[in-house]
Amino acid sequence: MTALTGTTDYQQFFIDGDWTDPSSPRTVDVRAAATEEYLGSVPEATERDIDAAVAAARRAFDDPQGWSRWEPARRREALERFAVALEKRASETATRVSSQNGMPIWLAQQFEGGFPALLLRYYSGLVSDTPQEETRQGVLGGRARVIREPIGVVGAIVPWNVPQGITFLKLAPALAAGCTLVLKPAPETVLDAMLMAEAAAEAQLPAGVLNIVPGGSEVGAHLVAHPQVDKVSFTGSTAAGRTIAETCGRLLRPVTLELGGKSAAIVLDDADLASTIESFFASTLLNNGQICWLSTRVLAPRSRYAEVVDTVSGLVSSLRIGDPLDENTQMGPLVSARQRDRVESYIAKGRAEGARLTVGGGRPEGFDRGWYVQPTVFADVDNNHTIAQEEIFGPVLSVIPYSGEDEAVAIANASDYGLGGSVWTTDPERGEAVARRVHTGSIGINAYVNDPVAPFGGIKASGIGRELGPEALHSYQVLKTVYLDASSAQA
Image (cartoon, rainbow, N blue to C red; front, side):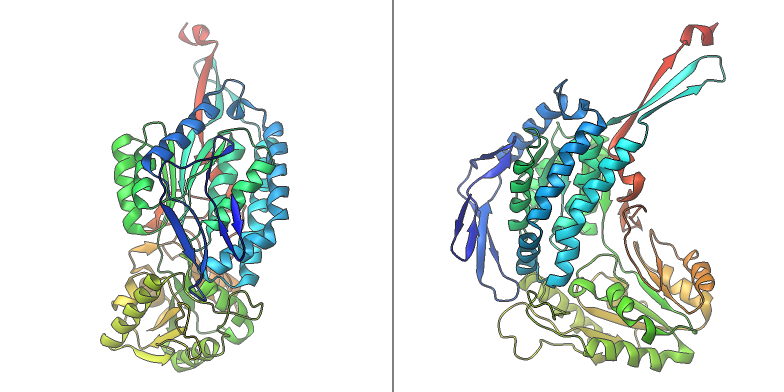
């Protein structure tokens, strides 16, 4: 690795516990979301590099004295070293992520700087404190020992929006379980991934346990289909997830897919949005609208519709747009010119389909450089409108009217997606009753927070499987049954 003045350029991959030369001179170049200036580069992987990384992970997993065979307490010690090394780099990690994808720095310090170490400690502790086998008395007279074993080599593919936070949704439970991994970060956010590789090297994780190989969708497809990979974990678009699911289905390969969302914020007729406005912002527009579980459909009762539209519009118009590295910025740029074009195309569709623009709709004044879009609110939106059905992945909210709780629930459920959601009310019991009727993988009442102890994931087009909670750990394990006293059972 060579750090240039003002930029960070890497010439090698992290494979088999060491910095390894790439097989191609091609690079992934990264630019700042706020200024469009060059930030640095990493090598771009080829299929040959993926093969080398998978081979290293395979050797590490199959080693009879290696990581997969270590006692959980020993792995916990290694993962604690990893957590400490990450914490030493937390500030730099947050800065790199904010610079690359536009995430406000105060959020990056939480999601990207702090969350990875927390997850490592949670999962290594969970494995250490939970018996990994049990003996069951059989009804036929014998006994059965049920053993949880690590699933094997994991291919992990992560997106650019919350790159380190999402990476450790996969790495933490997989490593704690005893798996080895090949990680392919998104091309837009690779500099943070290489910093994380430096932390892994400092922590002296055994060779081959964690391999980091940046590249595009082609090498990602090669990783997914690789014959020596035992499980795939992917976070990204629903379209890409379908393709990955097809490949894994043919191979009978376990897969976890955390995909898109179009969640609903159901504002009940007794809600007091003014008193929960910070939580409402976090549930609907966090990270410049670039989070899959955000409640971007705001369902408002007709009896208070104008008031809710005014409140939401007032919130959005008051947001401080600025440099993501400024602590006071609430809304930074989008990750790329392509993403800005995508969001602007949806704003144009909203106008064309007759929705009423109340705030935003263009580019903010004074930002001639960077991929900025004004946070935008549409009122008088029909749930069948394109902006209410398709994931925009930007700071665009649709306020949809309803009459009565039954219609609100029906509108919330009238979506191809089912990932997140929220209910806003002064009566928590009423809120929970409504939340139970919404078809989704997770939903919050007067807030939305992913807690490590609870499973997170979607239904319908939002994915397959769960991350977080003990359920995530179990997805990186396989069950083996050893029949004891079998002869007595047969007799």
